[in-house]
Image 1: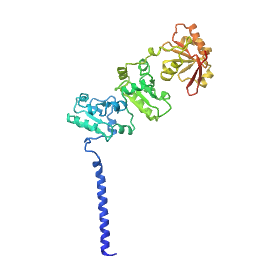
Image 2: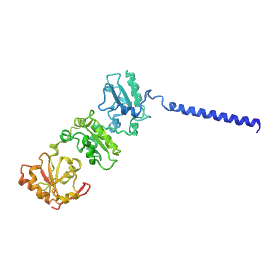
Image 3: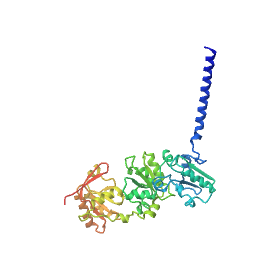
Image 4: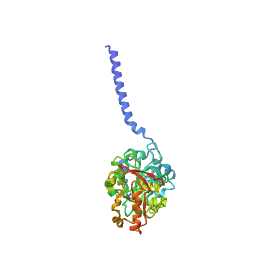
Length: 375
């Protein structure tokens, strides 16, 4: 090899080495270059936000959603976050804590969204000393495996449209749920979650919305996490809970309202469509008594029914409750009808009693079909 060729090859090696160093340095500096200049100077991650998302929230911490209230915040937000849209910041500035030492965490719709950065800058200009931005925002919150919260407006829309969701009241049943709850909600107290989890739908992708007694109540949050641990993938919390529902919707469901049963055409019968709706949405508001024989009941029955065979009913009538409507059921309407008239003879003061005048086919999974009998 000639000296000239050797020198050329050596120079090429040096140049390639220097180029590699330059590329590496550029790559290392790329993180700073990739971050837009409009980013706020103090950023935090999802773990930091979750650490400070306490229930109830302390007075010296506020998580702030800078996105529009509609359609973003109402459909989903970080639990306990307050809605202060950046475009309305000046009008809603009084919602911020009075203490300028309070921790403020702003977020919006992800790393391409400027709203939270703008709001954080405004808050800092007002003298707040501990201002942070969760740049990954609401998408980052969900990506980290956290459940979202929804607003009263969203919940009411689902109820009004009879959407395919499962509303779950995590409060105690007797002193809370029975006195009033959101229409269509099932009672699954957090205290008894493990014992009653079979009330949850079998489909793990079904939308579950938990609620309890408002922003100071942890029950719905605890139940939501338990549901996610069971593998449910579409879980939300209505953090404002029943107090907000009652104040905004003005519509409660209580025992007295549920007691206004829609009667069928035959004396003592219950309207079939009404019965199916109640069993599906508010099964605990009816006392279902299956008067078939014990062997029939053992093969298939409704989950919330109690078996008192018609041959044994007369002696049990005096023990029947009077605080909820009683509905007798059987396979054809014959024995259930007999049960209704037996109550009239033995305990005529018990007025809130009905029976199904129809053919019922019971299934092992607790479901059923009803066929109206020919008149």
